[in-house]
Amino acid sequence: KAEATAFDQQSNFWLLTLFALQLAFGTLLAILYADVITKAIKELNRAIGQLAEGVFPAPLLVRTNEEIGQIKKSFNQLLQRIQAATHF
Image 1 (cartoon, rainbow, N blue to C red):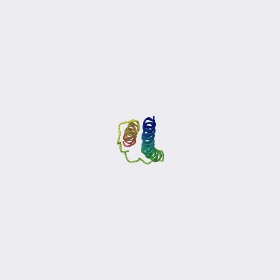
Image 2 (cartoon, one colour; image 1 turned 90 degrees about the vertical axis):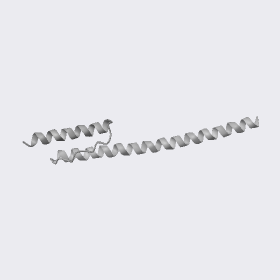
Image 3 (cartoon, rainbow, N blue to C red; image 1 turned 45 degrees about the horizontal axis):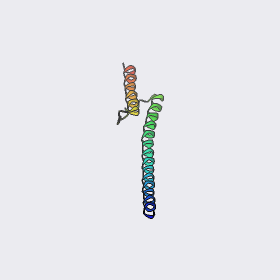
Image 4 (spheres, rainbow, N blue to C red; image 1 turned 180 degrees about the vertical axis):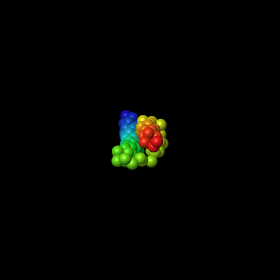
């Protein structure tokens, strides 16, 4: 019985340790990804603000092909079309 109890305690310790490490790693990844998304949204917001003031912003750098990257690509296409329509 003592050996089984010691084994159970050791197993519980390792399970809790692995859980804590996974939780910490997952939290870190969530924070890093949130920062990436926030930077992309701020970049879009800045460019839209410039366009609203009548200043054509530089094309946005598209680094990914997911939703944020697709929005940036569409914004760049919009800029090109507006510039083409305003320069005869």
